[in-house]
Amino acid sequence: MNNTHLILEKIKKINNIVVISQEFEAAYKGILLCSEKNYIYKKSYGCLLLANGGLGKTTICNSIVRKNPPYEKIENNIKKTIIPVFYLEIPSPATVKSVASSMLKALNDPAPLKGTTTQLTYRLIYLLKECETKLIFMDEFHHLFDLQITTKRMNTVVCNWIKTLVDETKICFCLVGLPEFSPLLKIDSQLARRFSHSFYLNNLSINKLNEYGTIHAFLEQIEIYIAHNLEINFEPTLTNQLLALQIYVATSGNQAYLMLLIENCIFRVLTRGSNIITREDFVNAWDEGITSYVSKTIVNPFHLDISSLSTKIKNN
Image 1 (tube, one colour):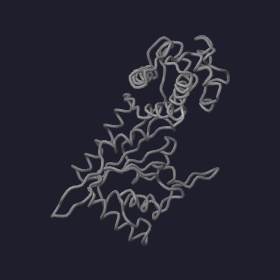
Image 2 (cartoon, rainbow, N blue to C red):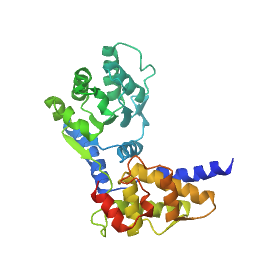
Image 3 (cartoon, rainbow, N blue to C red):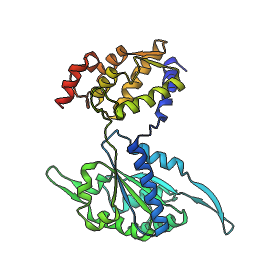
Image 4 (cartoon, helix red, strand yellow):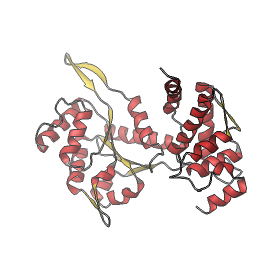
């Protein structure tokens, strides 16, 4: 095993970091509450998990799925598999058959593509009951729309099927996707009623330049985790006023890009056999264009002072 492979295996540890922000916790608990309401009230309490890419939607889904893994139990002398929660991505293009097949696959149906739409639906409802499923995450819900250059139309056939499925099963469905599609989904009043709860995840933020913002809390947790698990430190610290502001301008507070930036710095440090990440590592990581898509500046923010960074923030 070469040295690069060993370094990457070590860095892989930080992929398991889950930073619990107030928004994350509110969404996590809110989704579980909707699921519990469905189970107790036997009514349809669906919800929406909305955020732009890289802000933690999939992390929340995976966290809840991991906390509620499949297990086996004996009922009437028969062993059965219970699948309390599962996650799927809505296929593109979305049809009733493609969505039903994806759900059957998640439930370990041996032939998820076999049968007519009616047969798939019947089998799906049966399996959801037998597997005692309480919560289903359906990601990429924008695939429920016919997206043209000038228009965005709802796929009424699939949406009507989902409404029927919600009513038949009384399971909590959480549609996961981009905030811009939420108003379109709610054009259908019946669908809106079934997905009345919305949870949002936003970019990490700063308050005033000299105040603690959500990005500082995030960076603090990341720094503690990296020090503990990789024995790597930052000089200056990640929550240093200037460095935190530079990271914010470099990433616009997008968690995924922020982590890509830090991963690059860790790789550099481990490659040279050090355990200290410096500002120069961030300079070089930014120069590779890792965060160019979301950066608030076209010049390297890790060369800028607080006054210049403030101007970049105000102009965006």
